[in-house]
Length: 199
Image 1 (spheres, rainbow, N blue to C red):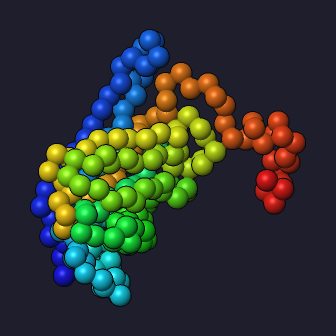
Image 2: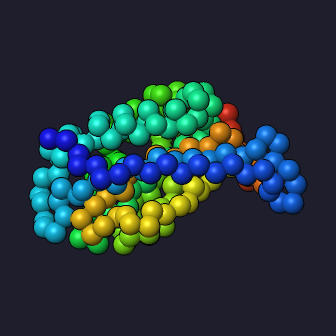
């Protein structure tokens, strides 16, 4: 059993000016999406595992290889995330099923040497629905400079019987970030940062 992939879409943006100041180095975010036929569309299926187990590794490896090729290396990626958008004849559970499995996400996590979990969205929509991929630092979930959202759309996807499966990444955080990190807030509120149980 293999996923029926209709197309693969790459999105890549490089911001040279942010906040009326040059971004030095330029701020780059990119993503790769696979438009896949939804094997459960239009009907209720109790057991989703066979397709999840069959599709997850194929999609995880394919999208990860494309992402690393875009980045140049796994080390170049600092923030990462994933998303899925299911078409109107599908359930949110279908979008969730294809991305919330270690058989999918671990390819990307291991390729970039990450410690943190992959931030995610799973939504439903028609063709040209917004695809929003939340990103965060691959090693430090409290690093707010890397709380980002990659957003794009595909004019003809998802069709009603499709799912768009996406990986996203950034090579750095927001230029000129100045809101501090989560740890400073915790310290200001009197939390003991040396005692994880107290946070």
